[in-house]
Structure formats: structure tokens, C-alpha cells
Amino acid sequence: MAMDDEYASGSDDESYAVDLTEQATDEEYYSSGSDGSSEASDDYSLSGCSDGDYIREIIGDATMCCSGRYGYAVLTEQDIRRQLRQQAAFTAEALSVPADWALPLLVHYRWREYDLIFDWDSDQDAVRHAVGLPAAGAGETPAPAKDETVTCGICLEARPAAATASVGCAHRYCHACWRGYVAAAAADGGVRCLALRCPDASCSRAVLRGTVERFATGAYVRALTRSFLDARGGAGDLKPCPAAGCGCAIKLVYVDGGVDVVCRCGTGFCWRCGGAPHWPASCAAAAQWARGDAEAASAAWLAVHAKPCPRCRRPVGRPDGVGVECCGTIVCAPPCAHRFCWRCLCDMADPNRPRISHYDCPEAYAAEQDEAERERARRALDGFLRHDDMWEASMAARRSAEREIRRLRGDGGGELEKFGLAWGVISTDVEFVVEAWEQVAEGRRVAGNVCLFARSMRGVVEEEEEDGDGRWRRDLLEFQLGQADDILGRLQRRVEKGPAAGKDLTEFSYEVRNLSSVARLFIGNFAKAVATGEVGGPASSGKSGTGSGTL
Image (cartoon, rainbow, N blue to C red):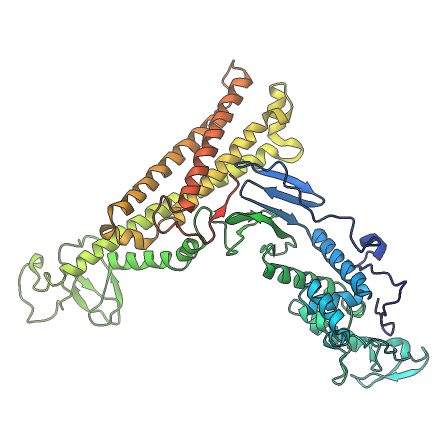
């Protein structure tokens, strides 16, 4: 390791072990074989995955989640660092350099080790110069005696040589200046400390991991992990969990379409867009809802319940008791205080205004077209609010089911174990109860996402202009949403009711398993139809990001 003056060189007996923890020793954290490979394997076994199944396998220390359409692994911080160690050890042995050298080389090449090896073999000196490593055969600057006085190159204070450090060059700095220099580089995520150079402007010698870790414990490891995840994220097979404080990452093994993934911390997100899970809706539909549909609903509400004041153009709400089809005196808010007719917008204080019934405003006929637009906006608003209420109800039902799952599992088995003991069986024999609640929670999630994203405000506003096929798709969507709610409701009520008095547990198990199977099949087919655009209209169709759930 490169510590102070001891700038590592690649001798034959050099250990390529790399310590990526803050306290553990090389032997405790990583030990490579003669071929530079780690004991842990990156080969993920996908056996046992069949269509419609949701399986969790433990692959080493990583949780493997797979179905017939996709598979991903949840990697902990230890799993990520294990992959770092493997790649660093492989590179160090391939180039015959210390691990402390392999790390900045990999960072410079964005963890593309084969590109690094190719360029190293082609022009080793150019690679060394680009990264800040000493040229091949270059000697190290002799270190001064420990009792010798050295002037710090930053604060210009005279210090004992033992109280100064360098990165193998002739420029020495006191420990206090080193700490400030490294701390400044470690700020804001610390990525700059991976490419840190000697503070002297004329020197390009790289500051390696040992020096950084000495003066800013843990900074190099955190920055290295971030660099690794950013590089692998660009390759499209590894992404960090977006939850604050979570150090896990998701490794995508295989996929047919988009994926909604869930981290160990419980945070879920769409693999393609990084937003909240929205399967079976497309990423485009989810983004459209987030950006425009709520704003469109607000605009529709204003169009229905407000009109611009003829004088100041500020929206003025319609008072209670004033209908759309009749006139009524409206007073704008101070300081404008303009009085005008709601229907024809004429000035009520105008002495030339015809003294006729408010039902026959002179400008009423010219405003009929505006009223037609307001009527369409009213229908759009009603559709928005209806589906928003359905989404809220689905999410509330999902949260209720998830609370029941936590209650049943609990610590030490929870209520599930008590339920099994009451019937003289072990908890695994009544696991079907938890599986039923999990199916209810997943079904409510899918139904809620369909309500939220499958229909856009534009589709509702343009309902009259759509052809019969478009209306048929929406009618089918509404019908199947009702069926989904009925199927999930029957399953939930049966599980809540429990075994009938005097009945055998086998009969209850058969009924619950049968209802769960029906719900799984129906929700799965319904979600796939929405994701592919077969139902729900254009708002839910599209190839972009049709994520797969756990069905």
C-alpha cells in the first residue's frame, strides 16, 4: 500500500489483496487465489424459475429475485465491495501491479478492465502518465531522516520529517495540511479523491488509497463504491437503491421488458425510469401523469368553477347558488371589486346594459361555445377525480394488507405461529394465509396503478372524438377493474373470516388457495393486457418500461 513515502511498486512478491473496509485487514476482508479470483461467485443460478412463479433464492450473500420474465439480485454493501475486490484483484494480477495501483487505473477507465489491459499492453507509459503513476523503472525520492526538519510546501512551517508525508515524490506536507487537502476532495460525495494528485502544481503524482484513507477514514471506500455503481449503472446491469441511507444495489440478471424492483430496505422503483413502481403502466404514462395530468385536472377545475374577471383577468370562483345556465352577479375580490354577470361577463354597473332577464343576456348566445368547452372540462375533471379516488382506495387496501402480513409474520412467527398451534399444525402448514394476503396486496397495487396511469386526462376530454374501438377499450378497462376488485375482495373476506366453526382446516386451505390462484391468474392477465395496450387505451400502452411485477 502507498503510505507516506512508501509508494507501492509491483514486485513479484507483492500481495494483490485490496482492503476496501475501514478497519478490517487484508486477510480478513479479501484473499485472492493464484488466479486472482475471489471465493465468491458471480454466477447466478436461475433454476426453478417458471412463468408465474416468484422465487427468492439466496445466492451467496445476495438475495435473488426471479420470475419467468425477469430476474434481479439485491446486493448489500458487502456484496458490492466483494465485486470491487474481485475486479481489482483480477486487474492487479493481469497488469502485475499492486492493488493500490489497480484501483485508480480502473476508475480512470470507468471499470472497463479489458480496455485498460489493452491500452496497458499497447502503451504502458501513456497509461501511467494519464493516471499519475510513476514511469516504469523510475526510482522513488529518498525519504529524509525522521529527525530531519522539513518545510511544509503548503503552510511553509518547519516540521519534523516524521510529521510530514508525501506520495513518493519530493514534495512533503505536514499532516494538518494533508487532512485539509484530502477533506476538501472528499466533500460533495468524494469522487474527486479518486483522482487526487500531489498538491504541488508541477507534480502529477497520484495520491493513492493509503494516503487518502490515512487522512480521511472511509472517504476512499465510499467514493470508490459510488464510482463503481455509476460506471456499472451506465452499462445497464447495476443500479443503487434510491432510498436515503441505503447502501444496497440491484443487479439485473435477465429481463424481458421492464422491471419493478424492490430493495431489501423495502424501497421499490422502476428499473427503466427510476421512478415509483408503476407496472403495468408504461414509463411514458407514469411521467405524463406526474407532469401534466394533475395540472390538467387543476385547469379543468378552474374551467368549471371559475371565470376570468373582465377587468383584471384574475380567476373568480362561482358562488354557491349561481348555476352554469343562468346569470348571476359576481363580485371580483378587492382591490378590483368589479361586478359582472357570470354568464355573459357584462359590467353590471354599465348604465347602457339592457334591462332584461338574466336568462336572456345579450352576449349569452356568443358564450354558448365557451359553455360547451366547460362541459367537456367538467367531464374530464369528473373522470380524473373518479380514478384518483379509485387509486386512493386501492392504495389504502394495499397498506391494510401489508399491515396484516407484518402482523402475521411478526417476530418469532407472530400470529401465524399461534394460528398454526390452534389447529395443531406448524406455521409452514398455514403459510397459505400469508400468501393470500400477499396476493391481495399485489393485486391492489396493480389495480391502483391501472387507475392512476392507464387513462390520461386527454383521453377523457377527447372522448366524443374517439372512435368506437377507443370507447370499447375504456369500457373493458372499467369492467375488468370492477372484476379485479370483486375477486380481491372475495379473497380478502374469506381470509379474514377464517375457518368455519366445526370445519376442517383442509377445507379452509383449499378455498383460500383456490381463490388465490384465481386472483393471481386474473390480475396477471389483466396487467399484461394493460401493459401491452390491449385494454385501457393509449395512455397505458407503449413498449417503454412496461414493468413486470411479482405475479
